[in-house]
Length: 198
Image (cartoon, rainbow, N blue to C red):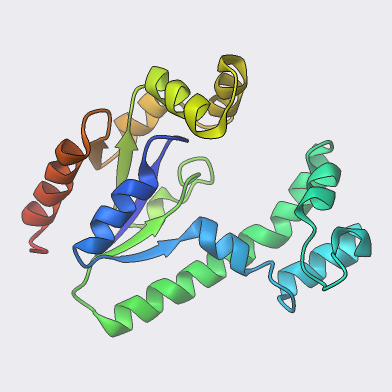
């Protein structure tokens, strides 16, 4: 079984992914994969450097994230151009990881951890979607504490994603992470029991 795992920023998705992994689930992490595909020598990094120039590279040929950020976050067209390079590379690498997990354990639970799963319209690719949910007010509170942001900065960052209530409505399984870690663990445990993975 292959499920997609998503949520809102600061909802605790990584915490739930860890709980799933501790119970034997195989995790394909989109954020980690995004970092891998822009390592030195990777085709996606070479394509980005040929598009935006060598100025986006450090002297050791690694990506200068700040230099690239200054180019793409000021210009939507340039951001789209970058995404047209990185998104297919990420999906291809994620699919390869999932296939490797399937070969290793055909009966296992495979979790594709994708922050912008609904925003990038990938929900049909999986057997079901698990959403890690906290109300928006708690998202703001946690994001302010975690990233040392002002209230308005946190609101702006959250507004860039699909509304968490909408994600909750679309989910096949909801893990409510607004309580204690123990309460979250119980919900994850219940999911495993109901799906027969225990």
